[in-house]
Image (cartoon, rainbow over all chains, first blue to last red; front, top):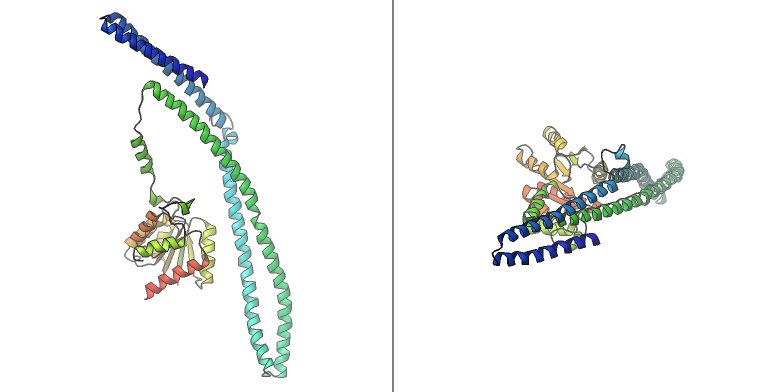
Amino acid sequence: MEHQDSNEVDLESTLKSNARQLVDSLEQGNFGEAVQLINELNKARDRGLYLEVGKLTRELHNAIVNFQLDPRVPHAKEVSQIADATERLNYVVTMTERAANRTMDLVEQSAPLVNDLSSEADLLAEDWGRFMRREMSAEAFRELAKRIELFLARSQRDTGKLSGHLNDILLAQDYQDLTGQVIKRVTQLVTEVESNLLKLVLMASQVDRFAGIDHDHEELRAEQNKEKNPSRGEGPQIHADKRDDVASNQDDVDDLLSSLGF
Amino acid sequence: MKILIVDDFSTMRRIIKNLLRDLGFTNTAEADDGVTALPMLQSGSFDFLVTDWNMPGMTGIDLLRAVRADDRLKHLPVLMVTAEAKRDQIIEAAQAGVNGYVVKPFTAQVLKEKIEKIFERVNG
């Protein structure tokens, strides 16, 4: 960076002193010297430009080496950090999907157990009421006693199963720890890549400065906005509660719809 | 009552299917985006459509527009269940003729309310 600063200072002072001399020469009618000075100025500008382009090329090369994205390197896919991050994120998708399915499997296996126990208990309670009100024959009571005995055995067996399922549901949440670690590492990589890219952009802007290139920022921004198409969808909104253009919960959605006459 | 559930994530389809079954709707079918859903709607006798917005192939909003543009399907009740929560998008869906809009994450209670409200209005 120090090197770059000295270059800049160099160019600026050359520009300034030559410019003054150029005005002097022109005022004195010394055109030969003036043309000579213009050449000098051009040379200084070109030198700066070449230096900056050279630096940018070197930085670009370093960045490619850092990202290990060079397709000429054998097994580039295996060593590329981006490819690795992609694989890690795919792992997260697989893990979360597996946990969700495992949990839903267990819930789907548990629901009929609970429903059956509950409906059988309802039936028994009804008959038990009849017995307590002495509306039941001895024969019917023996039948009821048998059903109660079966129900108790079944309750013991099924609640055992249910508590097993609940434990397994708890265990199925262990993906959170593993995927959390993976996502943190990928986040770190994204931050690194961003700061490297930012350095490159700064380098490139230095080239623009020497070359006198001026970008139309309005146009660039308009182009970026054009790429955003709300119909394609954007996925979940982060910080929805801090944004005015986003409904932060179902109540917000309902209010908006009812304001539209829904 | 035959219901089509459209979402690109199988876990979300499964959650919705389970919630619908709890509400007494057991006759459901699934599709993973608008491209597969539209021919199913056109050939099957569905009474209700639950769709996500953001899907590869054909999105939910495009599916909704295709349904409203189809003479035989245009009166089909459509409930959008989606993570898309921008006001512009909700207005867009309303203008396209959606019957209900539920943002993810949602509760069983919210889904139940919205479905009941839609049937009340359709039957009433």
